[in-house]
Amino acid sequence: FLNEMIGVIDPSRPFLSTTRRLPLPAAGMTINVPVITQRPTPGIQATGKAQVSSQKTIITSTGFEAVTIGGGADISVQVLRRSSPSYLDLFLELLGEAYAIDAEDHALDELIAAVADGGPEPAGALDPENLSLGDAFVASFGATRRAPDTIWMSTKAVGEFIDAKASGTNAPLYPGLTASATAAGGITGTIWGLRPVHVPTLDTKGAYAIVGPSSGFGWTEDGTFTMQVDNPALAGRDVALVGILWAMPLYPSAFTLYNVAS
Image (cartoon, rainbow, N blue to C red; front, side, top):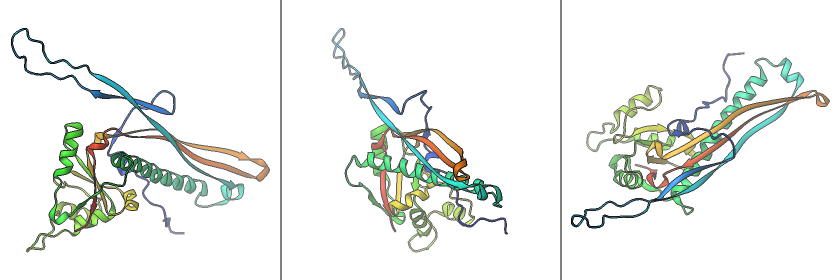
């Protein structure tokens, strides 16, 4: 056999790895986060000893629930002992790959649902050949008083940016992006000062891009755990991989969703 396995893909999680990982709580399946709902209001004092502006600060909280992601199978002793390469090693690798995809998918679904606020996706049109991201900057500053720093893109969206050409010269509008993709080293560079991140899990959402601050989405994880127990009655072994994930859209209004087409 060739030392190459057809069908194994990259188990990385580009969306989660480019957002904010928070500390794992000591116990429990809910993470409660303080929320400032009313701020103090300073103002100009009318005259000496006149009453200054006064408004109490109100802090509430919101909770984020964990989800458990897992998969498993019953593997026969014959396959465990006589497979080459090791079926168990391959099975755990494939489970890890599937776990990574499911974790990314859940995190993105939570973010998109929070941005949409329970309604239909509020995705605007984005044309790489006539790029305008002003609304994304306004949304991010309005929610967090900080500029967006990242644009997360589906495969189709990356392709649209690579194919974008300048009118008249037909030169690539994003040569750094095109060069890095052509070199098969992933995508690098900047788009309007934003870090571009290719997120294959966004492919199921369409030609999609999300712009926002990487610190505006938080997550944490307990796991992953590999669990194995022999089943003598069946001459086999039950094998599972399980993880517990919290996905937390901390500032959903700071993110802007786009459908990308040129």
